[in-house]
Structures are given as C-alpha cells and as structure tokens.
Image 1 (cartoon, one colour):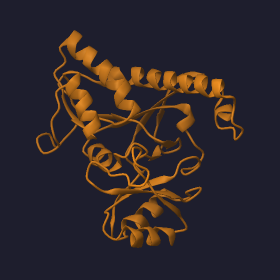
Image 2 (image 1 turned 90 degrees about the vertical axis):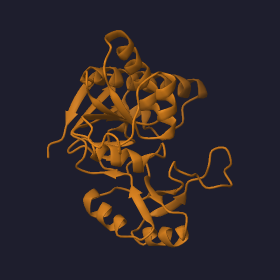
Image 3 (image 1 turned 120 degrees about the horizontal axis):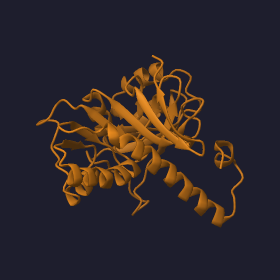
Image 4 (image 1 turned 30 degrees about the horizontal axis):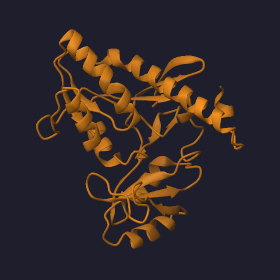
Length: 253
C-alpha cells in the first residue's frame, strides 16, 4: 500500500485498518532488522523506546546469546529498561557510561533533506534526546509513513514541561501560534500523563514548521519547558522501510 493511501483522510473499513497496521509493523520490523548489523562487539549502545525497543531488543538478545556480544546498554525509558532486563541484556546508566557509540531509536516524523525529527509520542523525549546527544551516532529506524515534506505535517510536537505553573507555560507556547493539548494518562484520562521524570507533556500543533531550529530556540527560552520533541542536527542516518523495500537516508548537512 502506498504512502498516499496510508495518509488518506477517508477511513477504510475496520478490516483494512487491521491489515494496514500489520503492514506498517512489518515495515518497522524490516527497518530494525536492517539496523541490527550496525551493532558490534564491545559497543556502548543507546536503546530507544516504544515499538522500536519492542522489535529491537529481542533481536539484540538473540545476537548476544548466539555471538557472545559484549555490550553495555543505556535505555531511554523505564519501560525499555524492564524489557532489557527480562531479555538478559546488560544495562547501565549515563553516569556510569557517559559516552555511547550508537543509539538506535524511532521517530514520529522524519524530514528527509536533513533528518530533522519530531519525537516524543511514546513519552520519552527528554531521555531520548539526552541519550542521542551522548552518542557518536544516532540511527533512526521507521516505516516510510514517518517521512514527511515538513515537520508537523501529521503529528503534534510533544513538549515536556514541569507540572508547576503548566497553564502559564502552555499560554506562552500558544503565543508561538500553537494549539496546545495537555496529554492525559491512558489508564485515567482525567489525570495528566506523567513522564518517567514526573513531568507533563503538552502536545503542540504548530502546523507546518518552516524553521525547526528557530522554533526550538523559542520554545527552549520559555520558563517551565524541560525539553521539546524537535531533534535538529542530531540524526545522521535513517533506515526506512516500505512497499519498495528498505532504504538508507543520510543528512545532507
């Protein structure tokens, strides 16, 4: 199924939705499988969160068991840490391992010209950015529906904020011409979603983001903002899978 069909506004029948999701999961798995050979013996590795971790970690555990890979891994969320422990993947912290060779993670949107990203749908954007900036290489794995003409095309921009005074922080973000929505907990929609660091996430709809670098700068000047889901100038490679196969994208910057 083409990218245009997947992005169509008209909702297909329920059975088609199920098949589409299965196809997207298959594309993600193909992208992750293509990234696995990048992991080499002796590496310090950053581990992403969400679907990326769910697909990556079992393959990583299998290589450790089969090849005896000596790795030390820094997870980007408590969820990833629990999964890694269950698979006997050795984990550590950035305090113990401040420099990483490689991080493999996903993205919500990818700008192909320079690999600027929107991340944070899984709620781990703060730790993901810290781990990415601690890595010599950040490699993004995704299905091709994540490739966009401009950031903000399909997904809001997650911004992590401290709970104290968050209404004021949201008002300052709205002044940047954003439509701000407080993310709520899945288990209890009456309560705000809490990150692993205990913060809130504001999902900000800015529409097409013409200048991600400038917007990032303005957001970070707002008191109460902890981090934004804009990843600009960080990723140098993306492995993207779709109906046409798996391809590698590199930053032109």
